Length: 207
View (tube, rainbow, N blue to C red):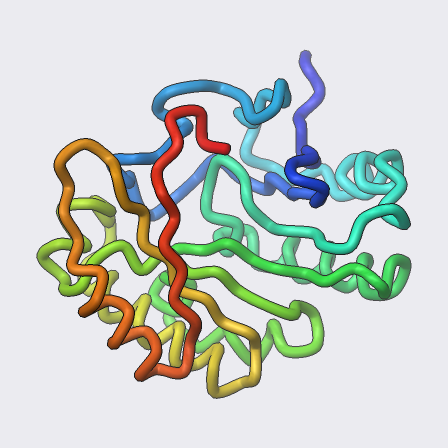
């Protein structure tokens, strides 16, 4: 059996790949095109996080030389909330210099039917949320969410992160085929919620 790649390196940052599950099926998702990121196959052999194995992979990359660690892989990291929190606590204790970020679709509160943002306070520094569209219709066409009311839940998640003083950025992917998003509308909505706006031009290989 191949070893699961829970850790991969990109752009001078450490990335953590906790799961292949996701509540979206975004039209631009890179995992529908290729198996790997910078040579690391991110498809897991089973949906179970080997915590000792993950921590060993993390220690093996010598985190002291890096400045940021990001929960982001071929799935939605917040679907592994308990493992994410355990890993973040481990990083806080052993590598306190590392900034910790989560890249997420922002649907965790909808999934768990509770506000999980307070559980992240003190464990993470920032979140990057896939905003994807100026309204639910555009969002649904691009994100193909599996849960109802995903767009509204995503926006409420952003507001909760801002409220709890977690640095929050909301992103829009542009340049994928002929999908059009009203960037100005997105930007104004995002900034009105107190978050930062970032455009992410679509790249064919994902990075």
